[in-house]
Length: 213
Ligand code: B16
Ligand code: MG
Image (cartoon, rainbow, N blue to C red; front, side):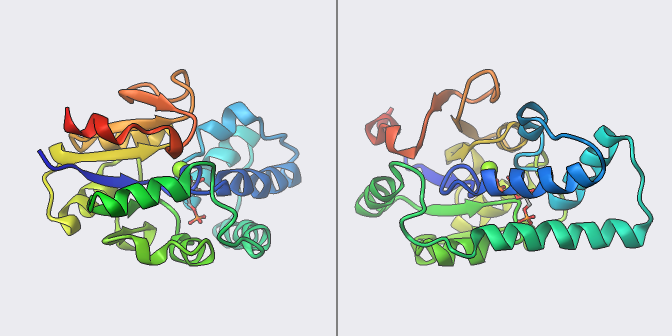
């Protein structure tokens, strides 16, 4: 049975998850709150708006709507400063070999990212043309852990969800895949990503021959 692959972006293709963390950490510090790696795990895959709401709740702080919008913009400006020097070499280990294998096996490939910056980051790392479909935060109403991102990607590829395999580094993303009746490969620790059927350190560890089973 043919399988389609849906890839998350931040933390799966490139280390932009770390840049998101640095930008949120800087904003949280202004609120007098030290963002921990543990709480950052809960921000992975979560939209910009919901991430700020979560940080404000952790910091026990409230903002006017105008300040909330202004801080979303500032966080994104800091994030963009960090990603502006990225290029094709700034992909995670195993990514080039993974994309070569996908292409040589002619596996339908989609992106399913919660980021509004997805197209820009993919362009920077030179992978924008490797996808048959791209779904980012601009195309959906409900972010992860809602399955809409991945269901939209499956629909664009013309595949039923049960034939799609999602690669995710976030708990919210793994939940979104399962909620959409898809299998998830966790890029990260089992303890951080419950529900994924296997856990890998990076895309390079994926065994493509396992798709036959
Ligand atoms: P932006 P992914 C997600 O991307 C990140 O994991 C998450 O940390 C970030 O808040 C979210 O995108 C929104 O990103 O601020 O660029 O719109 O992992 O789903 O590719
Ligand atoms: Mg991610």
